[in-house]
Image (cartoon, rainbow, N blue to C red; front, side, top):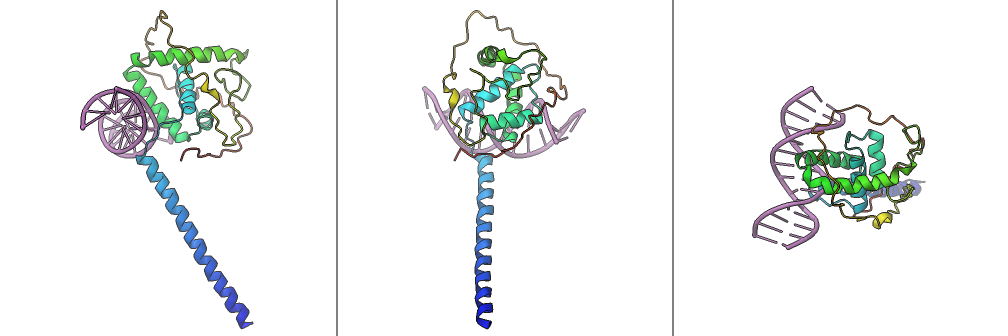
Length: 200
DNA sequence: AGGCATGATTGGAG
DNA sequence: CTCCAATCATGCCT
């Protein structure tokens, strides 16, 4: 009996120590990663930039994505929601500051989205849960499987800014903050909100 | 090395 | 709380 108790006790302490160690390790890892994110800036993947730009330029009149939209954009781009918020914040500021510089980009993406918005049928709001995606209908698998294969490589540079198209700088010098730009048409299944960390 | 582009952080305002 | 504006720090190109 005494032997058993001693053995169990020893095992228990060993496991305890192991657990402590692994926990500490995990915490350290998380912490370092967080700290890393602060200082170490890595450019977003092409896909993320594409997705964000498409949304931004197709909603230039009101580039304030709702929480759900942010989530979806984040998932599509393989980034976090806060990163989406950061990006939109930076983008708004920088776009306003230097509208002319973004004209090429703007036309590029607006054209791209306009060609892709064929699905936008009646009702104004597409009931389809998959948001208007560029190129074709549904290039993004949306399976959240971490298989972030860069599918839309092809439409990276569809066409240069067409000369001749008069790009009048939009006079919306300041966006009016309209609350709830998009009706909360939440896609029922919000599962698999797993942030697959493809980077690193 | 320098300059620019860009993501992240911070502080103030609503 | 979110957003804006300024700023910092890094990545990338020359």
